[in-house]
Image (cartoon, rainbow, N blue to C red; front, side, top):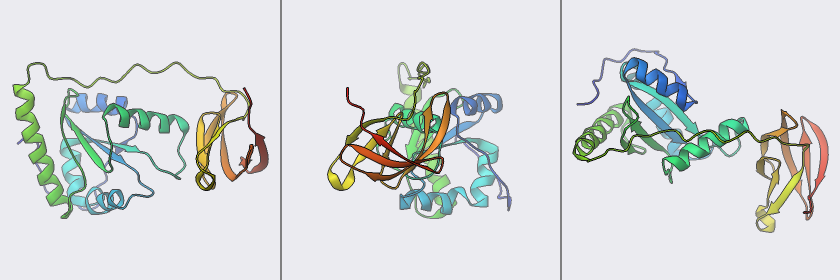
Length: 229
């Protein structure tokens, strides 16, 4: 088998990386597999169950500390997160062609994708058994492939310089409108960290009107009118 389970250690903590390049360096140094958990932590029930039933359990923590480098790729609806982290996570989801959540992707220390799986009932024992089964099958397929494709991160995009807060667009039906403010898209009631003039501010969307939006910027009320081009 590609991984070997060790005995559970009660109360053992595991580290979840949120930066894939840093995690890859750690995986190479320690010669460990990488587990990428693509999740939508604040609204999907199976993502919540996978965390509570597997990732938060001592048995998984013991296994992971000896065998895995863990990476959380979270795409929440309402949880506060920097826009840079949101962009990085969306890019990773597109790169790995993730279409459902949770999706767990396993990479070997060299970056070769060994397999993927989703929510597994039965707690950490069932999940780890399925994890090893997926890895074993993918290992055989990879050995037979003529030129296995090694995962490589795309080059980082050039930095974008944002000006003052501006309402760029309003889209969607009347009951579910979405606004684009600088680099962030929000629905009514949502909060996001928005880049503006070399810094980040917290913006909460209060009301979307026909040609404007009412927001709070770092707690201060403000109305932004639609920018006409």
